[in-house]
Image 1 (cartoon, rainbow, N blue to C red):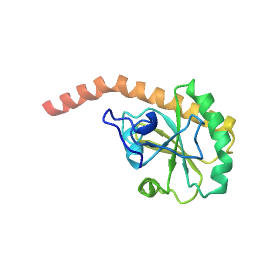
Image 2 (spheres, rainbow, N blue to C red):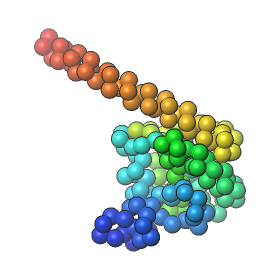
Image 3 (tube, rainbow, N blue to C red):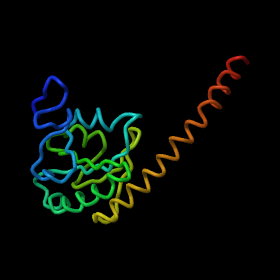
Image 4 (cartoon, one colour):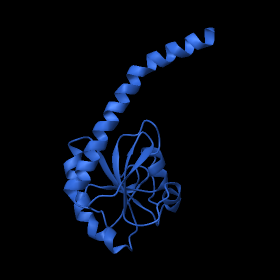
Length: 160
């Protein structure tokens, strides 16, 4: 794990829970450890992210890095992060999500994961993430619209 400065950023200017990975160095893709995954992605208020779960010894994972980097460049403008989780460093994350093989790609939003099973090209990865991000945006706004109705209904039912 990377050393952490008193300000909460780890050495090298990385956010807490973000670790150095030679596979993703210079790509614009943050690599998270277990603490970073939990604090940045595994909660209801988490921003949407395309997440690549990888192992540094996996040839398919290494081969996929340039496509993931291109997808990150496309998705940054759409407000969707692209991150990677080194499952050798964070095996508990892989276990908790039932990940059995690498690379595994999931879209994370509001603490929930959606599996991606399509081609591992930048264009397809970005299209999948953009589609899921649009859906999450709509669901978030539907929830906001329904909150007052739910509260009124709960109040009505308590009076009965």
